[in-house]
Length: 397
Ligand code: ADP
Ligand code: MG
Image (cartoon, helix red, strand yellow):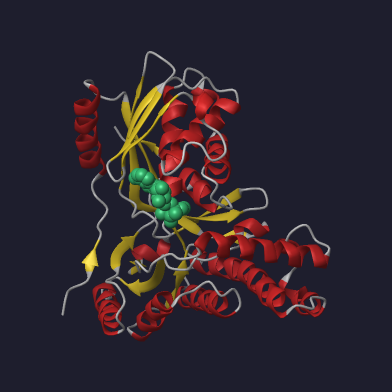
């Protein structure tokens, strides 16, 4: 029997030093600095961001690092340790759908900041992403935000940019230039998180409240399982869920499902004549309420109440929102049986990652049980991470 594979977060200073050396080799001179931004896990509140709802993510210790140097001209070059050479050119060649591929996430940030009136100088950029790519842990936002925070420090007028401007540019890059639908949770937490805290985020106005991760000192940890399940049909399914919740809101005469309180849910559901819309709406309305319950439980260090809300969230995503896959359901089932106090998928679903709240003396045992079940059921080997609420985007070296 093979052993579980762990993905520890590397030491930021070591990554920055290696990236600086790589940059110097490629460009003949060291970078002006290295900036980085975290991926995230969402404790609870899934598919609520685009319904003006609440969610409760925190920043991972796993980050994307960007070494950046200002050039003498207004051109840009991009390279990634994971993806090789990317786009090079001027910002006049950037727009919806251009450039293609991973470069869109970076070029889109530069383009959006320039459209906000910032003088973005020509840059050489080399990135190293230590958030697993495409695992539902938001490597895309980590990439965008690492570059956005770098520009805010190297552009001559960058100090005029608030974190919220960087967030808006990163969201615009992903939605408009990369053409991937995103509701904004990922970029908000990567830029606004506070170390040692989860971020209670209200997506109607992006207001936030820090909720201390007191349970860490009480012996609890969050185990993250990257299922490595193949992501099929993700974009189309995401767009379909988004459209169906918007349709439910329209039929109920509200701007977004956030406006429907959980006490009004039965009456609202009775006014929807379509069973699919009813189940999609029920997920969103009950999920927003579960975020309130979970944030309150976390604040009080009530681990049982937090875990129960997480597990209920998973059931709603599986049965009403229909965005889980057998790998995600397996993590939840097996982790709970092995002693987790709560477990759920995290991120958009259709593959990606799941989380389990476990005693810090028991996480290895839970990981072994999940790993064994994956082998048994013929799934690809998962990858395990431990998540502690970490620092937001900023300068690393
Ligand atoms: P997630 O954000 O959950 O990791 P996404 O599909 O939203 O999944 O984003 C993954 C994409 O982001 C990758 O396919 C790639 O295009 C881009 N990306 C993220 N990190 C890097 C990196 N270090 N180098 C190159 N591309 C990256
Ligand atoms: Mg993403």
